[in-house]
Length: 341
Image (cartoon, rainbow, N blue to C red; front, side, top):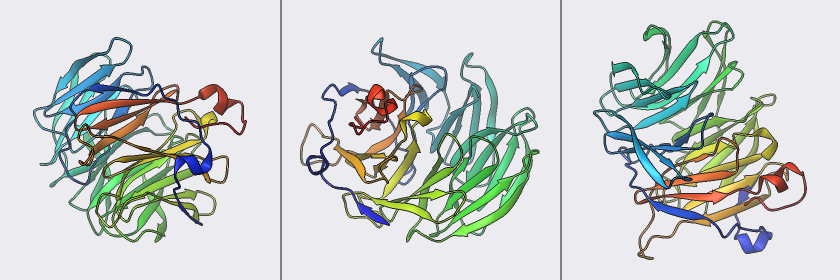
């Protein structure tokens, strides 16, 4: 099933007019890699790169603070299990404790660009970091020792990697139009389950829902494909509004809401649009928000987005600002036919 996203007015959704924007420059280091806005599970501060710094913005205080100095402008980043991890253009990798700011590792992993990162805890309790690199490898790194725990050798550059919340599966996207799904043992070793061919260009981003039953892949062909782990066939292929194939409409980032009861999926295009999709209504209820530049004729480049910890907000980063959209969580948890935003 392929769905073309329609205008908001055509589907009757209510948009919260209280969206807010704050001037906060975010840096896009690599033209394709745009998953550079993150939140933690313990606060609703928004973390993003600003040149070689990682900053966090607190919306209540309306202030931003320097979280750490990297020494490089990140191409990718992730937050998980109390860790802030960033990767760079020349295989740089930095791992720090989000709470204390202490540096746990500052060096390099891989031979080329680090494109994607994810942190998981194995069923045996070991913290592992998955590092997707342009050198065609996914390295599983033991956080305690920062040694290579295992390696997945691939056949083309790896753009993104995401591990299911239950720690049982890993999905990866590549420069070529396919997706690989692996199972992970309790010790963090992998077995290939499936090679999926439902995109027509490079995969750029991937993500899991909270109960590990569905995953989504964002592609440069302008689509976000959602899979069910039980069937390994697309539940839906969502498309944006702009020309795709690497242009303005390439989908660069896809994520599920951090609270499963909200049943929301969102994805961003290369420029101008974020789309929010209601997963309860067979993915047919959705809302598109166009980001406006102060100069109307210019495109707005999107650096990434993230749901807040409680799911009440969506934060979108641009080269000039951080924008917050409010989610009506009361309506969402009521399971009524109500608005997404």
